[in-house]
Length: 273
Image (cartoon, rainbow, N blue to C red):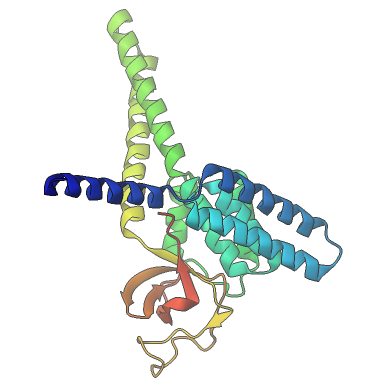
């Protein structure tokens, strides 16, 4: 066997092994885990013994997380189911975290949005949104409330309307109503398209997270010796943006633009990739 042939065989073996690693769990095992997770979740909901319910929720959580991490399968429905199990188990931080992950994949699902709102109502830290940001959210509600997929779909629809109006004007001559429709459709198309571009760029550059520890002291620097940033610790479920990372620490900003440094093991980032 020549050296070149040996190299080719070894390379093929390594390539095949890497494909198996990327493939994760076989589909049959994923299906079984999903069925078991759903059954555990249903048993927990109907259990009369609270301790048994907690054990069943834990089993459901472990199976959902195994599918997500080892499958690897990551979709809005899985994160939604996982968040529901965490919420009913009383872990508000993990619930908000996984609802946010589900929203990042599919923000148009009303059930996810509703449950996320309920989980947020259980947060201990009630941090207001800055007035300027709240005004922008009211004026440009379509940018903040609609999902990325919905806005792209609407941009395509208005593009089609513009094309239809222009085509009819070419065939049948100019008409005030068609011209106004084409102009309005063009403006709306540009608005939604611009919103898609802005949100896509923000998602690519902005890192968000949720505190998952029961409570954590935010400090004015990346060390335990720094002065606390707030009189009270931050609690699980509090959401934040990441400004900077250092070994073992996250520099975070809250919705009112206040912030501090927290240990990175007290929180998890909203990253589904």
